[in-house]
Length: 328
Image (cartoon, rainbow, N blue to C red; front, side):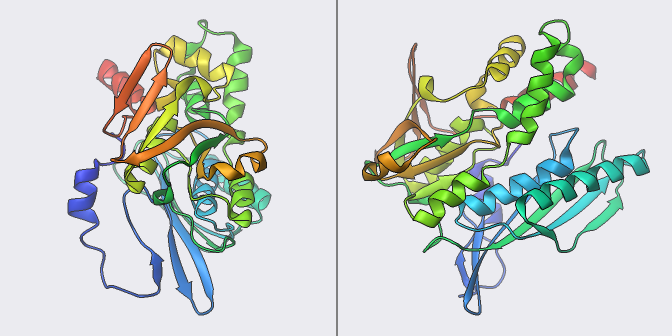
C-alpha cells in the first residue's frame, strides 16, 4: 500500500500527460507535489492529494495537506475543491462532521471552498477525500523539490511523524491503551491540529531564500528528503539525531516498533537553503546538507550510517498491513 514506485510512475503515468501546453510552467515530475500554471498575467499553483490512510479528521487533513503542497511551491492557498467518497454505511452525522472540519480548516487559512462533489461509493470501507487546492504564486519564481544545490543546508520546521502519530493514537487506540498513559494518547491525538506548514513555507517563499522546499508526507521525513535528493539529482546527508521528534511520537513508536523518521509527516517542512541565509532561519533546525551529484540519502545516526537508495515504506502503511493480515 502507499504511493506507487518511481518506475511505474515514470513509465506508466508521466509519459501520458495529454496535450503539451506552454502555459504549464511546472508540470508533473517525481518528487513534485504541485504544478504552476500561467493564466493571463497571473501564475497559479495547483495541487491535488487524497486522504486515504486516516480514519478520523479526514476533512481537516484534506484541506491542510493540499494547502501545504501549494505553500511549499511558493503559492498562497486560496481555493479548495474536495471530492468526498462515503462508504455505504455512512450516516448524516459522519458527512456533517467532515464538512465542518473542511469549513473550519479553510476559514483558518483564508481559503474558500470553490466547488466539489459528494457521493456514496461502492466498495470502500472508510471515507476518502480527494482534494484540489489553488493559489497565486507569491515567490519570485516557482519553488521546486528539485532545486537543491551542492553546499545547501537542509533545514526543517516542526516535528517528524506528527500526522502519523495522531492517526496511530486515534485509529490504534485499543492497541495502545494500557501500554501508554492516557494523557500521552490525548496529546498525540491533538497533534493533528499541528499539521499546517503554510506560514513557515510562505515566510521562506516571500523572502526567496529557499532553493527547494518539500512537505514530507508518505515515508516520513526520510522519504521527503529522499524525494528531494532524487528530484534534484544530489546526494543528501541527513543527521537523524538532529531531527525534532515529539515525546508522544517517540513513545507511540517505541510501543508499536516503528521509526519516527519513516512515519507520515504532514506538519513538518524541509527546505534546501544557501548557507549564507543560515542566520535568517529562526524556528528552523539544520538537519542535513546537500552534497554532490548522484541522488539518495546518507542517514547518519548514533549506530552508524545507512545509505537510502529507494523510497522508504511509510510505517503507517506497514502497521495497517500487519493489522489487516492479523485480522484476516
